[in-house]
Image 1 (cartoon, helix red, strand yellow):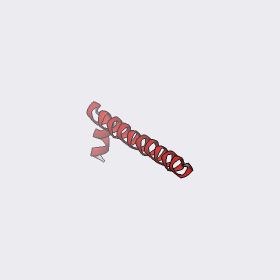
Image 2 (cartoon, helix red, strand yellow):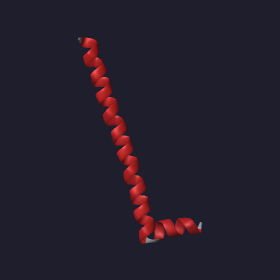
Image 3 (cartoon, one colour):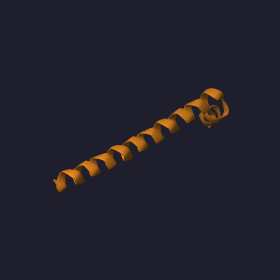
Length: 48
């Protein structure tokens, strides 16, 4: 419980939460971006 208070109650903890959230969103974005490009490339290769 003390760890959660420190995580959400201090500047360093909030910055850590923000960093973890931003990294997670970036990973999700990159996964979707690359998957979309791979599907598009496979579709174009099948048409040739």
